[in-house]
Length: 237
Image 1 (tube, one colour):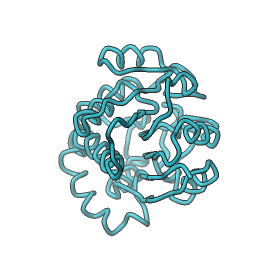
Image 2: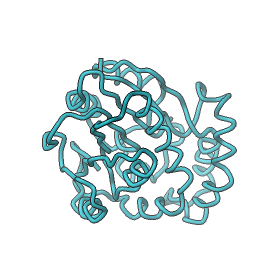
Image 3: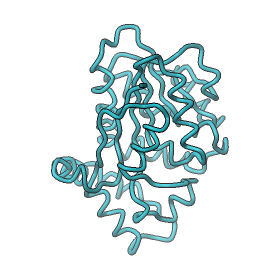
Image 4: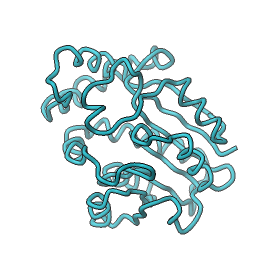
């Protein structure tokens, strides 16, 4: 969790399950972040994992890029997990010791009531021309009780996220939907899933190993139409 949210996150257990069950999914997300990060010279660049949770993506980012991110995380238990992984961790953007060259955030903005102010604050913590990568859930039509339980305020569309990024002072360089099959499964789950809205670890592993790789192939044709998530890359204007 992050600035502007309750400091106790109801989905911490899901983060731990997802770290192991969604290995391919998490690695793919980070590879997109790293590829955008590497579009520029990365020598000596400062990177921030905004809403780092237990550090799942931070660990992968360092492995893929050779750069260890700093972390923003307000949940006290998750801060402990991050520091146990030797990740430099802060409770708020105001505490950061220096401006960032690159910020990434995965499945975080939807937890924040005032996401517009948060995006503006993230812009202010970037150097001139600094870059941000945002990955968030898409489409209210696949809202489930799990969204309620983990404290989501909204899901996004390409249009709504792009509008908020531009209003916050970013130039959007790329934005698209991801995981079309995940969208279809999430829609189906609304009708056949259990009341908690929470998938089992076994079903997550099956999705990660068998469904998600196929979804990425089909995404090439559906990335402007629909998907379970929105992925955006933008630069501070």
